[in-house]
Length: 221
Image (cartoon, rainbow, N blue to C red; front, side, top):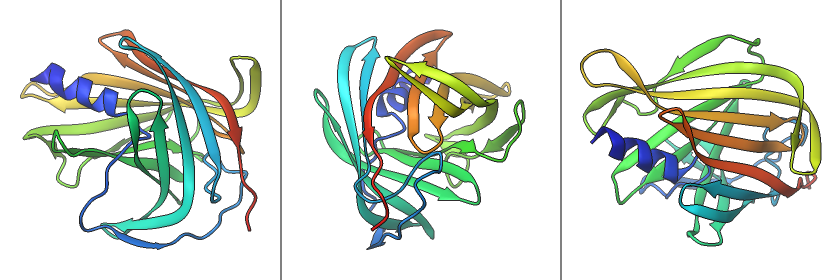
């Protein structure tokens, strides 16, 4: 059962989610485009996805709308894999904290990740609960979120990005003997661009990588 939890969450990816019945759509405001996840309407990112189950491409596009879920405003995105199909995505940004809501309706799983705080110094961590009650399928769950590097340069493919923050999200379950690592997500965010790389690590091995290929950050209307 432990392995099943890990693979569902890893394969679901941070970018993908499905709608909740109590979601309420509202018009989205426009944000500045120099944040670590620009949220201007119709901004687009394309990624090469490589992993244990083969290669794929992923395109993420902000729709210009937003959704309120449990009192929190999320910016809506369409996420399209060449092989796996399309789905809806939700991103949030508030008080320098960035994250997303990811769901797998078929599996009955819904988790929220906090993957970046752009004011947190290098080496510092914070703990967050991915679910409202801190449980996932009856098992206590948490994430330990750490800022690994700040203001570094990062080369992805043939592009070099500056003003990059490297963060890590460590997904942990408690099966009765204390919290144990289940999956590690390594993120790289470039200021004014967004996520440029994500690495999913299971049992010490790379399970999947997402590397940016192209992007178009729209200007506020």
